[in-house]
Image (cartoon, rainbow, N blue to C red; front, side):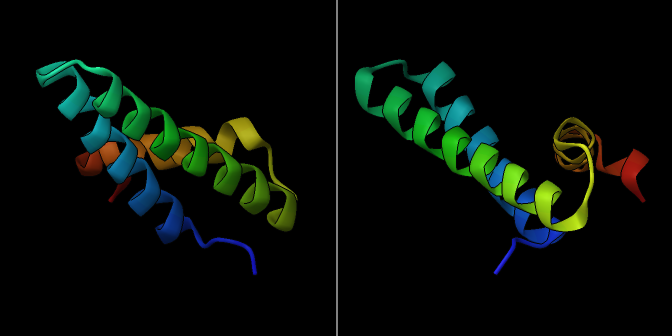
Length: 74
């Protein structure tokens, strides 16, 4: 079952939290968590874009905008 847009936002939020943790305390463990979260997000973006017949890039940017600039996504 393809991911919903809300799923993508939640996955991007997790990836951003993992990135922030890595920046705050860079080590191999936190880098791995960040990379894995980003990989899961990217795979979900591809799946969603294909299911919706949309551009992967546009789907990715919309999810990132919703996480990083929620005031603009409303």
